[in-house]
Length: 352
Ligand code: TXA
Ligand code: MG
Image (cartoon, rainbow, N blue to C red; front, side, top):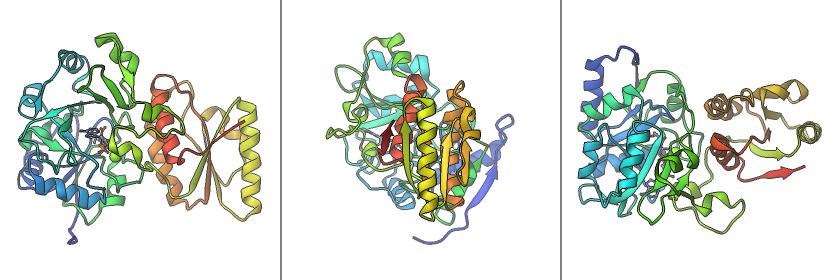
């Protein structure tokens, strides 16, 4: 891949510079890549209907080519050209949650190249809420394929600087409009079966969808802790969202968790390792590791979600050897938080 000079353009969300957005849209129309903000994480965009652009996305991320991309749209009307057999429940979900952090999977039309869908006959579609994202998608002609803008396997980017860390020199442009407000990737729901099925938990929960359309299932491949069941979203099978250091989650009653983590830290120190702890604000003062990071208060799951990936990336900068993390509630948004945290830990969980 040839080295490019990566530009970063600041875009003010409250006063979007339409000249810059048109220029960025033109790069996409010409088959180039542009990283851009969304409310979940930063995306690495390319024209979804151009197979060369999709190939470039896989190349820049170092992503396995069987892992399909999400197609981002800016109007519900535009979905018709790329999807077939859209059930009424999907329209109800779109009306309730779009624009927003929900991705739905449908049968695709011929217009969507197999390079975009990783060889599948289905396509994942999302209409993001972020105004900069919506403006860019419209300027690009309506269909922007975008995975998270990280190198494959690393934590997803919630800030433009994270994108730069991973993709500097590999893409021509990053649009920077500050931190992503949600900080975890969208909920993915498969609408092609009898019962809508969640393939990746996110901000839009099962309960929120059930209030709109009735029964929703969760893919067994993502709930079962140590199962042989393969997740249906190809991307969910990879070790992911991971810092470089080995991470272990300690789960149980608060005092027991603190005692166990401090014991592990003492052991690590004795072995000459630099140890880090990831904890809730309420308990950070209790740890004696080299590095102790707070994800925010347990009272505020939104804050914990928004801080998670940034904290994981910071451990890389601090060059820690091992990380011990508290576990977080698995209700509602906590499900998505724990799903990402467990992946980052390669599913290593110690129960105390
Ligand atoms: O919040 C998000 O969804 C972000 C922002 C940029 O919009 N995008 C994102 O994309 O997280 P990515 O590529 O990092 O994750 C997409 C996931 C992968 O796990 C992939 O396997 C799954 O969606 N996926 C995409 N198309 C699919 C399909 N047709 N069937 C099943 N899974 C699919
Ligand atoms: Mg990703």
